[in-house]
Every structure is written in structure tokens, then in C-alpha cells.
Length: 196
Image 1 (cartoon, one colour):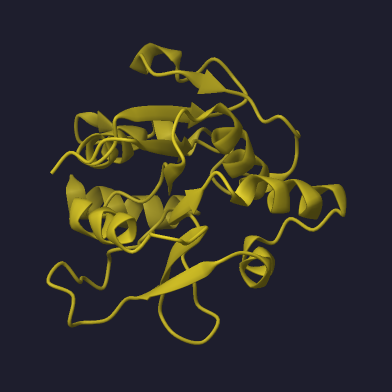
Image 2 (cartoon, rainbow, N blue to C red):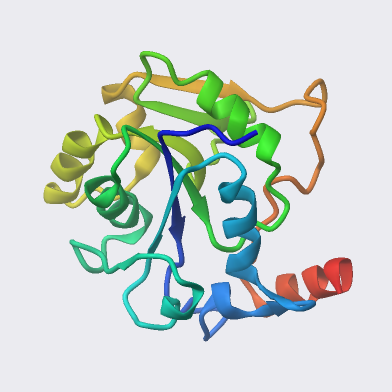
């Protein structure tokens, strides 16, 4: 299913306050959590970048870039990825979402024509900006928001050509845990039991 001219940007995120350690380097079975992100992105991307402010991920063999604007959260990580990407289309994925399906990522790409952002949407104000497609065109708006100390990604949607991609049970790859992510030791314990 490889779709060329798409970059995968993994947000490794550093040491989570609640986890107290690098989430992406936690082991699930015989793999680090970040390797689930690498595996799914490799199926649809021809370049993979990791955004992280340490040397902890260099062993994986992919380019690692620190935040251009430190302490700017996921928006700063995405901005850094867009600056360093060789492609206009960029799939952003947090390192702690092991159940993302390549079919979902392919659907985001297919809906990207003339759009700056294609973001999974559950209805209402429920978006998944940590698993979304961002065009390089989003870079300038992200920079403007960060300069104004607004780091809320959904706030940029109205200023960019955004396509909310509806997530519902009609999708062949739908699962209630599709966007499951890990924010605490308790959630990681649940995940360990699920994956082993």
C-alpha cells in the first residue's frame, strides 16, 4: 500500500509527567511502543522523522529532530516535523497509539486533495489531532499561533482548509480502541495485558 511522497512524523514527546519516563521506549511484548508507530507509517510513507528532545531514539535509525520551539507541546512538534519534512503531505502520529491501522492513514491521504489538514473526527468537538494529516501549508499558521502563545491545535482548524474525517462503525477497520493512547501507568498496564 506504499504511497510515496508522504512523510511520517512521530511525536515521541519526551518524559510524560504521569508516566515519569519516555512513553515511546516502554516495551510491549518484544517491541518498544514507538516501533508500532514506525511499522504502521512505513506502510504508507516514504520518509519517517522522529520529533524528540533527547538522543534516546537514535538507535532506531531514523532522523531525530528536537523542537524548534521548546515547551510548545504537540503543536511545536508538528511544526518541527513540517519544517524538516521533504514532502507536502505529512502523517503525524503520537508514539503511544499502537492500534492505528494503515487503512485509516491511507484514507486520510486520499482525502487530502486541496486540504491543509485531514483529521479524524468523532462528531462535535472530538478530534484526533495526534493522528492526522498535515500539509506543509499549515506551517505558517502554526507559527503564528505559537508566537501568540496559543498551542491548541483545534484552534487552527478554522484558519486552515480542514477536512474532518468522520470515524464511525461503517469504516471496515473501525475498532473502539483504534485511537487508544497511553497517558498513565494504569493505562499502560491495561495495554500490556492486551498486547502482552
